[in-house]
Length: 598
Image (cartoon, rainbow, N blue to C red):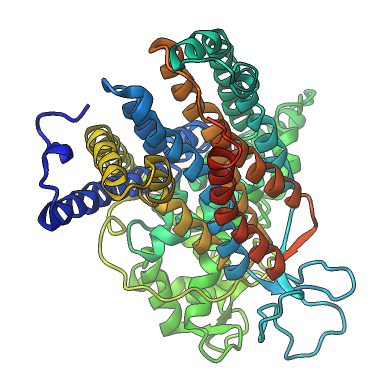
């Protein structure tokens, strides 16, 4: 169903010149859809940096938009006059996407995220063992198939459970396909399968809704989602797309509001007590417990929530290590100033002098990471406090604490040092703008990127299907195999790169993000994309003649899902999982050409 706006690949010459033209069309359409998929991915990631939208984006928008490319290929493969034949391109995209995501990037994640495994327990050593030598490193110095690998955390196992549960949707249509396999015609098979396709529509729709509801309900408590937001924040600050306050400004402002509310509550309580009145402290108690009492205008206040503090540490630590060339754990005044500039938060000379004098507590001209973190928080709070309340910076720290050196750190945070980030060239973008403007610009840019990417996919998916079908016809290779190999490169290239990038951080959290994201994509294929497929089967009265392909999908999902329940995976596991990709293709070929399936 190629639009008249595009070249019909069937009209191209059958000689070598026509083959070159066909290849050119394949590369152009493929590149456009690949870039479109990346735009959708990057746009939705930017929305994660808007706190008011992060919950719905992480739980609903990201999973749905990530499945749009595969869904579009499946949809348009069944919209033409020759839908039954071209639908093989769609099932190739569905099978290829699911199997590729669970094999190749999974293998790359194990290789990129590998650390040393304990020879006795087999557990991944992300932390220094007791009694380890000074030269110990979690990064392997030599390749070892058995003792290099990754650790598997509980969130990955939960993702595996959900993936295996969603895979059962394929059985709703596949079991009847086995039963009615003896039908003499495709039309008769389609009629027999149609009620089961309708039932499959209901189960896939229900599974899709339940999955999104689960994602929504766990959005605020899901540690992996919070870690992913921190990773995206760090990446965008490193690239100069926004400043620290541009990313965390709303959380800092919320802390200011709660701080003032608690001060008013504390002042009102003291006044009522002095007047001999009973004080109802029930409203103030939760805040007092979380942030500390203000009975003495305490400066030892904890104004930031634990999740925000963790993000702040995660973001600031790589920047700190970038300038700590001698690995002493301290930076001098000039390095701290440059570090502030990298974060997009350079204070004025006078404010920086005051901050430095206050936080260089021992007067040695150096700040350690904890002192630097306190300085960052003080600066951020003062910027917001003065900008919205026109008060002196000292008022945030308390009247009694103004102008004094504090005896200890305001925010005591214990966190592991992450590996040093690769330094990137930082272009000027949004980080010099006020944080409110940064947030609005982020939303505008994110929606633009997602809308443009989705539109391009809807426009170019149909021409790509025509080209893939013609490639199969001219080479004599069934369109399923062409689509199986090529479609995932177009629609899921961004996921492959993102999974490997996360894994290279070599932490238990980032490898969990990588693997859980891959299984989440498989869940969307078994719900959202399969729903589109069954809708075509039901509405257009098509036959489900893809038993071999379905068996291959279920085989890979079950094997990888079961492996996810192990406590660790070594390089042997990586090699085995990678091997599943060609095995699945061989399985389809054998079932179709030797055992006569489909």
